[in-house]
Image (cartoon, rainbow, N blue to C red; front, side, top):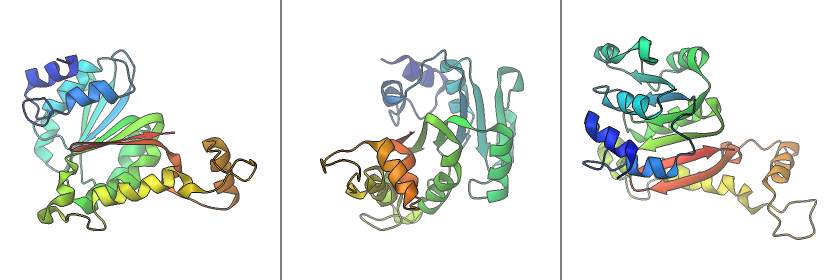
Length: 222
């Protein structure tokens, strides 16, 4: 059993293998060490158990949670570098305040409303504030299939369909690298320069990888 999962179980967060089984995957795929000094933002505080899990596992890190419920402020613990701000993940002014005061971040995790439109908006707004080689995580992406959350199988505008499209951007739409005779050459540094010369501006060219797991998407920034 992974240590992160054990900690999650001890606090009773639904990220443990007793419910979603996310923490086993996080310990496997996150590019961080426990002793790293990280700046972490989690969208969606609920009962504060996830904040405590992250703080115990990444014990040298700063943890920030945001939530629309004012009662979540009670889970703030400044002495242990856990902060909580109250506001909506779709409020541009609030997000600007958060990024200006607390950013940039090594990890942003969206466990908020799970409404497809909200998740995509927040990603577009906050991904620029992820550090290089940092990660942006979206949880519970199965709401892409649920009508109550604005989802539907293969429906355009859902979380999964949006990120399927981003995969094309990560691959530069297969564009030929102009300074190479071999058309199969795929030097991302050269292709990024090429896209900039042409005035292209795609969020996917800032992404090194997108990892699709059951219920989770992990996006790693270049």
